[in-house]
Each structure stands twice: as structure tokens, then as C-alpha cells.
Amino acid sequence: MQLLKDRIRKDGKIRAGNVLKVDSFLNHQMDIELFGEIGKEFKKRFADCEVTKILTIEASGIGIACIAAQYFKVPVVFAKKSQTKNIAGDIYTSKVESFTHGRVYDIIVAKDFLKAEDKILVIDDFLANGSALLGLSTLVKDAGATLVGAGIVIEKGFQEGGELIRSQGIRVESLAIVDSMSEENGVKFRD
Image 1 (cartoon, rainbow, N blue to C red):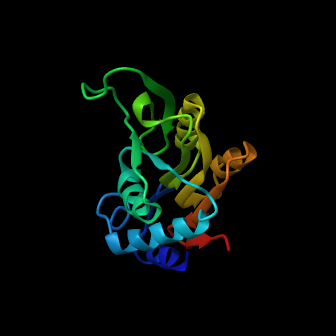
Image 2: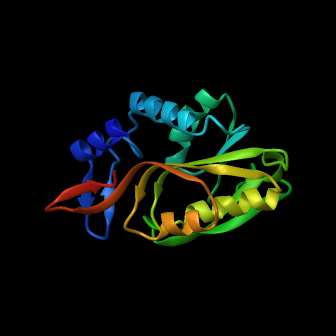
């Protein structure tokens, strides 16, 4: 998606440890017009699927998932990273290691919101090591639902996550795949 790649080149910041900061438009301050274009692109790429729900993980994926859901006309379910008093009853849970935060979370979704008849599209902002996506796919599998694919805004193609997820037969559609990045040379994208 050229619009996204151009925005990453213009406003993305590369930090030590393979960190690409896009918080000025994607995951802290959110450019809703850009999100609209992202949502349209995900709808186009997954038009052949009968998506019934979009699943994401808190917090950065929620905004993107909500805008995308408008084009699919389906609800969004987000996995919480901690148990709250609001989640009562049976839950699905999985462990996820956050690349950005460097810690492991137990992600949780109430069983009321993932059903066997659901066709789930996962939406997330980044795919790096694949842990979040694997954790979300475990929730879908535990519910007996169908995972139709994963829509990723930015994939770090130089990390193992994309290859790992695809090797498990999961359809991944990434809008921008970063092949390499450095402060000296900027971001290089896969075509």
C-alpha cells in the first residue's frame, strides 16, 4: 500500500533494537483518514472471506480494527492483556510475548464473544516475531472458530514472525513489509 509506505518514510522513526516508531500516525496518535484507507484495503484483500468478527489485541490494534470493521460491517473483539472484573465467566486464554514491551502477557477473551460458527479476521498494527498472532490464533482455535486470515499494517520481514505464521497455513496480508531499516539508510520495503 503505497500511501502507507510513503507515510512510514515521511514520519516513521527508526530506533535501536529494530524498533520502528510510527506513533505519530498509527499507534499513539492515530490518523483516522489513513485508517480509513487501511480499512478499505483490508476489505479489498479479504473480500473473498465471509468475515463475521474481527479480533485484535489491546491496545494498538483496536483503533485500526474498529475502522476496518466498518467496511466489513462486523463487530470487533479485542483480547485483553489482564483479567478485569468486567470479564466474568468462562474465558479463552493464551500467552503472548510482546516484542515492544519485552514481557509475556496472558491474553483473555470471554467465551461469549468467540463462537464455533465465527469466521475470524485478525487485524494488528505490527507483525515482528509472531507471538501476538500465534496467541490470537490459539484463541480462535480454542473457540472452534475459523481463522480466515490476518491483516497486518506493518510486517518486519527481516524478523521470523511472518515466515512462522505463514508456515502454519495462516493467510497473512501485510500492507507494508519492511525488508530492512537503519537510521543511516532509512526503511527499505519489499515490493
